Length: 163
Image 1 (tube, one colour):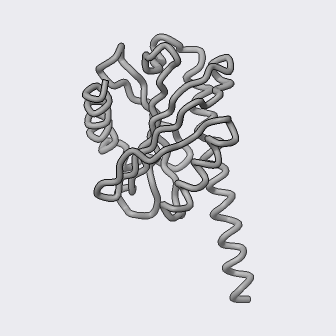
Image 2 (tube, rainbow, N blue to C red; image 1 turned 90 degrees about the horizontal axis):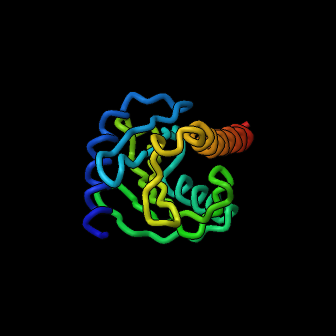
Image 3 (tube, rainbow, N blue to C red; image 1 turned 180 degrees about the vertical axis):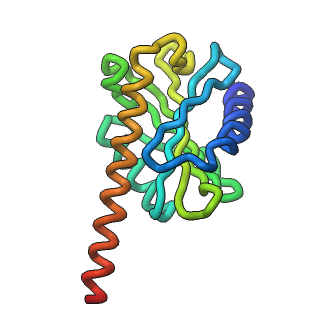
C-alpha cells in the first residue's frame, strides 16, 4: 500500500508540473494511471503564505469531522493525510483525503492537490463516479474562495494599518 501511495505521489508530482499556468479559479482534474484511474484535483491559491494555506486547509477538514496529520515535508512540498472526513458529496461517506501543498511556478501562491481514498480502500475516480466530480470541484473552489476572502481581509488590515 505504501508503494502504491508513493507511486501515486510521484505521478502526481509529474502531473502537477503541467498545472503551472492554472488560474486561481479553476480546478484541474487529472487521471492518475493506477488504482483504477484515480482522479486528482488541483487548485491554485494565490497571494497567501504556506502556513496560512495549511492552517486554513486543516480547519476546512476539521469542520468536516476530519483529523489531519503531516506525512512529508520536502523541497517546499507539504503532504498531509486527513482521515475520517465526512464527505457530503459522496453521501456523507467517511473518506481519507491525501493533500499536497506546493509552491506554484511564480512563487505567488500554492497549488493544493487532493486524492480521495474511499472507505473500501479504492481511490476516488471520476470515471467511476462521474456525477460527483463537479461537486468535488465546487467543494475545492469553496476552499479557494475562503482563501481569497482571507487575502482580502489581510490586505484590508494592512491598508488600514498604513492609513
